[in-house]
Length: 253
Image (cartoon, rainbow, N blue to C red; front, side, top):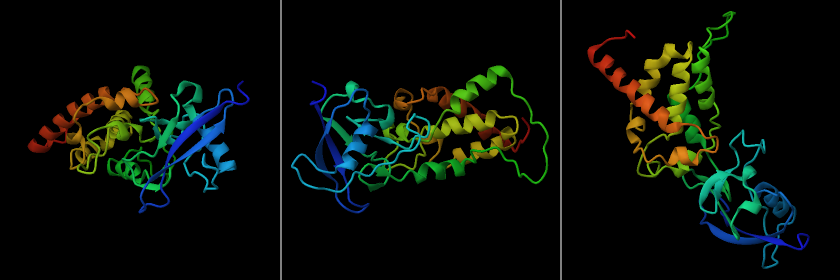
């Protein structure tokens, strides 16, 4: 009977950023349609492991609970994904939960994704509007361009593509696949295009596009189905053109 069915979790835990990780096992009473987040909430309400020992509540990040914010990224059964959309019924058991190792672990399943936001700052992934005066209605994008730009804008900075990418590691400064999307997205905007050369030049520096090995793990793992490999090809083309412009000292389009 479903009322007595238990779901087993093997969770990688870490007390602080400098301590060694260890594993702890828990069992949660099964409920129909439960996801990993709801199971973690049950463990937090009653933090007792399978050895019937009282322990500390599990720490993890979450926010929207509908695969929009990207906060609940973790490695579930060896695959980086969102915990809010990971349904227990669709997972092999026991369910193994680990933090994404691409990022520094804060505690348990919680990681520090600051380097992703630092990368966005480096390539100026925003539309520059100083806000000191009324700019009036902005330029309109052609509908065809708007549609594919919208697909790129679905990126929620979840970090899954970095965890899946073999080129993002401790021996590389590669900023990660998601930056290709952001550079392409903001360079496509009529106002953002004014800083196109600046973004491309920043992404051509150490840690930029040359770090990509085109393994295509990113597009396979992206929870939003963003066509990252298309962006990689487009940005590489634009960067090649920009490199020629830099060499010949031309600022003309």
